[in-house]
Length: 206
Image (cartoon, rainbow, N blue to C red; front, side):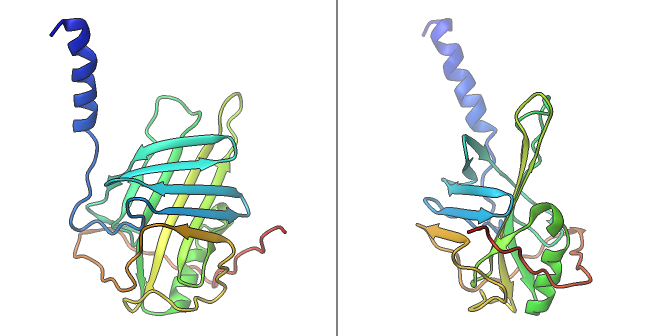
């Protein structure tokens, strides 16, 4: 094989070798072929689950594909997937968190969502599926976007009627999310923090 032909092939192999893979302990939300589309106060966002840790994010006039990183330390309750958006450029960054969150009560879950709600303004459905989205304008270039996808479990069960849930705010197609789940044992990096109030989502614009 000529060097000119071999080099691109080797670069592709090297790139594939670096892609993160799901761990048996990874508490992910999206399965292969699942799409979650959310209408949030900060804009519309769609996430397509691919094989393993692959996710395709899209919104009004933009699309980005990322291979998320599995957490090995529980981070504010999540042992799911993330992308820290490491980049040499301040433009066009995409920060991502995805995972399952476990609580003893519905009130505890709503107090958790209250923390950071002014930034992400999350929406959620009656089954406890949560999507938060934020767009930070960067002068002279593409904005930085942040996305959170959580599945809430209360005493190991997906809620039937999570208080404040709006089934019109989130559409799910393809795949499935387990109705029952338990947290995997893992070192704790940062404990969950709860707000002083329960989160009440903003009403969607009609």
